[in-house]
Image (cartoon, rainbow, N blue to C red; front, top):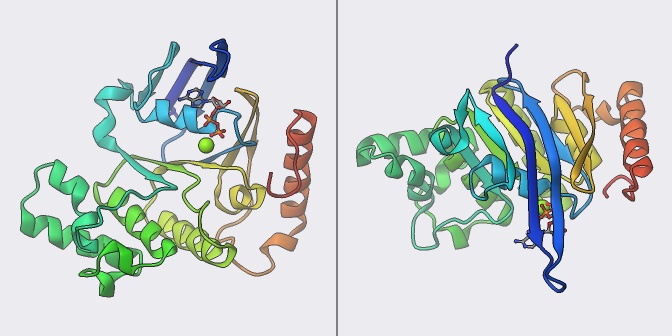
Length: 261
Ligand code: ADP
Ligand code: MG
């Protein structure tokens, strides 16, 4: 199947903050992502995951290389892309439902249609009874779900997620992972999800792209059956073998690993 997202020779260099010398954040990345594939970018802090994601959403420009979505250069494809980041970025003065409708508003949808769609997506993330609340009245996990509803409401072809559950406690995080897996299994979109957590990647991904030191180290297919939220999923021998492999890949590439890296 032809890739939906094609990353070709993407190189990014930042001036080093203290020395001013070049810091290579991405060495020249090639990556193909199939339609409706769930890909996790896994690697230690500082290996270039966020930089790659920001290039994929057109926020920063690479020194060399290209990203296309459905054959279009990234800046022309932005209407097909939804984002969810660790900092959800909800507008404090707006209600939950009107935050969910933000992307629709930017697309010029009339108010009535916007609210109807926003309510549907709030229901999808289980927050229909919080529509008239303001963000400060929600927990961190609930705010992330609002962010997810907002991203999905524009019906994106591609959803880019940068450690979206990194700032919530472990139990909430597990709940959010299950919620995301459930929603994705019902409404497939192409997802690129950044994480430094091996178990999170194994729980969510069809394929894990391991990164270290500004480069892709390896791409690992995850053929574990879905759904993966049963309590024994982590003791499945295939799961244990994949996890051992991934940690081995991370260690041999020089990244320190021990479950969460
Ligand atoms: P990750 O998301 O994997 O933790 P990043 O993509 O954020 O990694 O960063 C990759 C490298 O680029 C790091 O060494 C980081 O310090 C550096 N970097 C990221 N953003 C900037 C910036 N705006 N200016 C200078 N250096 C940056
Ligand atoms: Mg990052």
